[in-house]
Length: 378
Image (cartoon, rainbow, N blue to C red; front, side, top):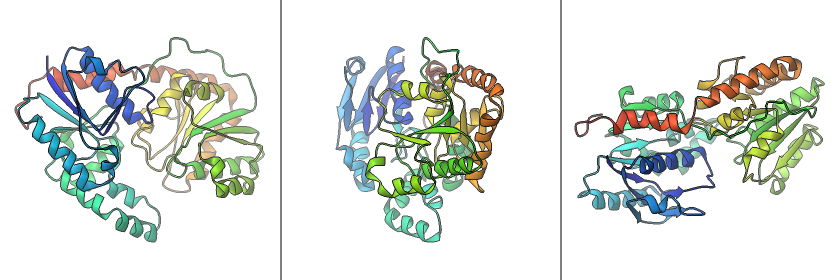
């Protein structure tokens, strides 16, 4: 058995706010289930029942979650962690997201360099560079020596980090995340008409919400009958977004939903998930929809596009040029050919079945826990 340390800002045992939080939880939880000695270093531990907390060898609290908004405070947090682990003799120390390196990095978010390059026009990029200059410099400093090994959820993120920080490709291990498998999945397509597209866009611009509305406008102008459901809790506080919906004449076509504690109800209410994110290192909602037999249309900037076989288990659209038109064309396929929907839905479900958290952890275990590595050489 191995002695492992996991380092994260806020650790959640349930009620995950992102796929990244779920992935890190699975690593910690399954490591304890396998009998490994697990210590967790964090600023905050959130859990309704604290079931996992009781299985940890040690739980060490340091700093404050808001400290992670400031590079110098992140470095202070990690320096404290380093001082604590010096005598612990861990087999592996695994930290989450780009931070001062210790050993193994589970990196699930794009770098600030990438975000700057995707910020929009020249002025937007310039403003981003000025406001995030300290963060950009810090990430360059942290990644210069490089982790012993970097776990990423997609080739898209691997390629971005390798390019921006000159990291050798052999340093990376790509493991697509898993998805929880429900015990019972309906075999019937939701009988209600018209066809319903769905999108989860809590951060509306980054998740491609405006792009989605523009594609819906094209479909409406072409005479298609459809409905759309958008998860965006702040819609009622956004008069500009309300005006945009009215401008596109989509008032009777779209329904904005609040935060969904149980996403199953959302997936059951739609026919197809759309993921047009401007930046998405994977996008777990795609797999979650697919496990409920709801196919996905995914933008080419999203890591989840790597699990899609075009026209077989879903569709991928090009985000680089006229993305709203490219998205609308893929949406039209479902609106024009309902007979093909059942085949694609079944294939989406079969694909999602192969992406379990058990299989995810199996790859992690085979690459780390079942092998012996010389120090600083993975």
